[in-house]
Structure formats: structure tokens, C-alpha cells
Image (cartoon, rainbow, N blue to C red; front, top):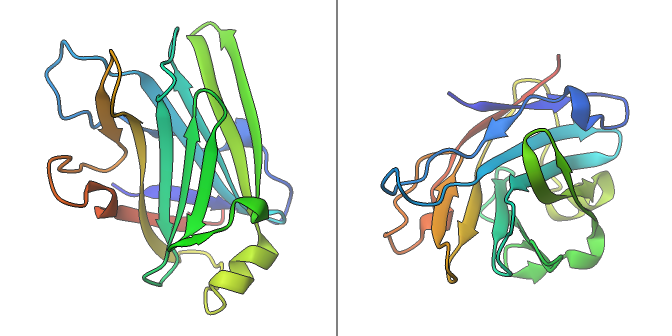
Length: 181
């Protein structure tokens, strides 16, 4: 089943967007698998994404990764960390200055959480993916990951199933469909 990226002409409202759950943790049940979610939307702002992990005490290297391919071989890759570090690239080009990040953390009935709202504005989409047309039923490929590759609570999770033992696990994608509700 593919995740549907909402398409709206209004500003992004994360409260009404469908949730993508990162639940493919290819480890035994006893291992650490934090509840993690993402929400994506194309709006008047551009591409907006909310990445959120529920972890009572996240490790410094606790990471969320978004990878999207807009009909090119150049993926848009964003990494955020629980200590507010961040990277953003399109292919090998650093685009961190062209991406808006808003980090947050808090606590609700589900527990403590951390994450970020991320926006790649329409001008950057046009600049790097000039042939890409944002339209209803348009398909793009990608994946979303929850990782901690070194530390006490090592874990690897993804939206779409991935073989994390392969040479390039972050290049294994599923399908996203832009949907105008």
C-alpha cells in the first residue's frame, strides 16, 4: 500500500494529514522499536513534511531520514537528529540553506516526542526538479527511516520494507502518490 501525499492549495495543516507509520523494524520483537510517524503535503508553501519520533530518552544519534525522488536520479534527502542537527541534500548538493526546519519536542498522552517540520519551497523544487509537475495522482518514489546506528539502543526502521544489510539500504524505495482530497 502506498502513502498518499496530500495536495492542497492552502497552507499546510499537519493536524489533518494522513500518518505514515514507520513500523518495518527487521529485528526481533524484544528489540527497541520507537513509535515513529511522518506526514507529507504539497501546498502553497511547497513540500512540507513532519517527522516525529516518540522516545522517552532519545540518544544523540537518534535520527529520522526522508528520501524522495522527483522523477530524477537525484533524491531529496533530509536527516534530522534528536539533538537538532540536520542535513539536507539533493543528490550530492547541500541544500540545507534552502530548506526550512522547525524543531520541536514535548510530551502528550502517547509519551515524550521529538521531531521537525521541514519545508522545501516551490522555488527550490522548480530549481532542482524543473520538469516535475505537482499534480493529482502523480507518483514519486522514496522512503522514510527511523535510525540509531550506534549507541545503546541501535535500531533500523522504515516506512517501506528495506534490507538494512544490503549495500545501499537507503536507496530502497516504495511508492508515494500525490492526492488532492
